[in-house]
Length: 470
Image 1 (cartoon, rainbow, N blue to C red):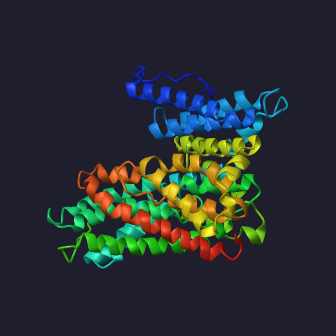
Image 2 (cartoon, one colour):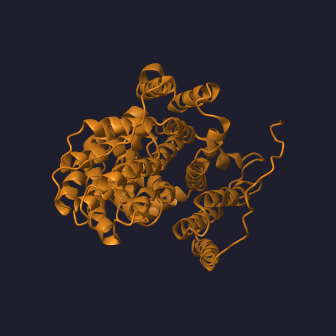
Image 3 (cartoon, helix red, strand yellow):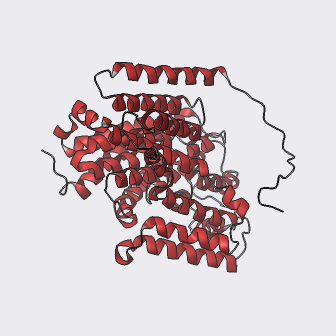
């Protein structure tokens, strides 16, 4: 059969359906874009266009009138026709528009793709379940140990696979255990909440743990600042560990368990087979190469391609598995990076710096400001959308201290834990019907506040001596 030969489909065609809410969001985005263009009359034409594109993007991402990936495409289209055509305000040549398309396959996007492929292989061949079962079986069955066990396993899985996938897996394992608890035992709420909170905190720890990390790394690379895989882990892993401990203490205090012993019934998951061992070897090799980039000099993005080649060539992943990857996430990351390119090319970044006068602020205030903006926005909209919108601003206001400010904002986006709509893991946990909005807000907002402060302190301790601003 030829590659492009049409295959008869048994799926029912989707009908056109646009709600009033969507129409309102789209209309609001158009109004926001036009208003931004008109208000910024004193700026250059390129900066006015970029500000208008930013206003359209932030409105569409907040209202979710169209899917996030569609908004990323809107950004690219508007950048090309308003900024990238010959004779446009940037004075680009015939191929000048390519600078807005290049971020779609930037090194940070390729790095994230490698992480997604590793996650797909782990999930398809059940290695995630085998790991979870191995850890949970050896833990003591006391309530505190079981809670800690679910948190550690979830966080570790989220370091290498999507937060949503890790949450879905661990909730599926948790549900049978809840049947062994009485309906009025507060430990039920603590266990359910521990899964999404740990998934988000675990995602902080590695560059491939969550899209905001990749967006920050990509945005920094666009201005010539490199953050290596090992450097990210050195900074973020201690933060993740401290926040997990604080989360455990908070859950045990807010939801004091009645049951001292909890039975966790793990289904049989089988033993490691040759395919599982092969995947573990490739995973370990990839991580080792990522951690030793400074020794061998191979870029992290090039290393990320290794598991893609090996898994597809060895048929560990089939073509349909590759087609089913989260390509929309990669496009959203590319769209956010492209927006950063527009800020830089149009001079809007300089305008923001002059307007906000952030160069006069002490480093701790810059980090705290960026982190607060990030965690507030990430509490009400997608973390990926939030950091995609904030990163151009953060890069602009960071000045000489751009690394701790950008990293702080990216890490803080994962601390947006207060509402069921804050992220997909929270939504999955809320959908179990075992939590209320109050349950999630009571602990989630506290962790968001503490997380933002800890991130500020950590960035100061790690980078304060290097970036001193009077």
